[in-house]
Length: 439
Image (cartoon, rainbow, N blue to C red; front, top):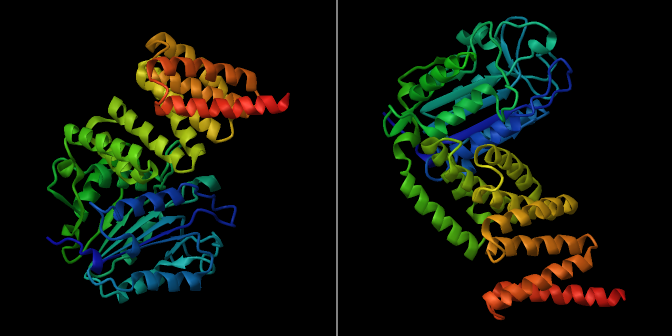
């Protein structure tokens, strides 16, 4: 049983999300599938290759250019080659398989589509010792008002490549699906989950066959199309990933990692902590479940880091969703929910939604005072953020009044030289000058 040598391996991820033929509906989740699969396969600790050896080809309109880019991406693969496609699959008149591209014609796929035979020839020419081909074809049968026979099921016998492991997303007479509310196709979403969380009963490393059989079990149990496989020359025994279920840290280990991330985020940059935070989140979810308080706290940190990194709008979306889950489970006045509300207000303001930020803070501040008391630092932070947003929307007098009250409390309890007191004093001076200028 062998594993990938990163320098000798290459990964090519191909996907089509938009089509000019209205009979081939768009598949918006394709981009997320490619992005997340790339992140998993290039993970510094558990991935197959470095980021420089993973090529993503999304919505490539020109077949000739696509062919050149595929050849360039495969170049240098002597150990492992992984080729993945997500998009519409189309069956030709002779039952040959075509992979949908933006200008594919459903009835005449010969022009404007990528022939699987052409892709197969390119893979055959590769000197890679082990080749893994993954086809996640989402078909247009339902959009046409009827269910088509599954193209992969119809032509799977044509897809064999010597020395290659082929994995497909569905069987004959089934359609590959995108389920409502999911961020990926049904197949790729569950493939990602297996790779991220691992398989408890497997060894330290997952083979291609381990991944396939777990994926097949998960999809069958959920009533989804069951994937298929073809393998030759023991390719199924190739180690494709480290088993997160075995190698993941304990809950205590993860707690220590989170403390270190928080320390570095405060001292350096929160945005730089995002990769580590996402790894911790995936491992916490596998170990503790999606609804655990520690998982939610890590989600808070991720949203905070995203907002600090310059994308407060995404942070707002994440925090809104987290607030709904925490409110239902913990209540709006739980300490964790209160902090989510604070972060939501901050990022609403940074997104330009200052009126909504003010509304959130006007409700949050009395809740904080009731739960923690007027002298709690959380109250002071919320009051300062409220004052800033009020000032930026023209409510100068109310903002000044809040800052004066805050300065008095902080001078007494923190001292004139405390950094928090200094920030409030600075903002108050600026606003007092602005108020004087108006007069």
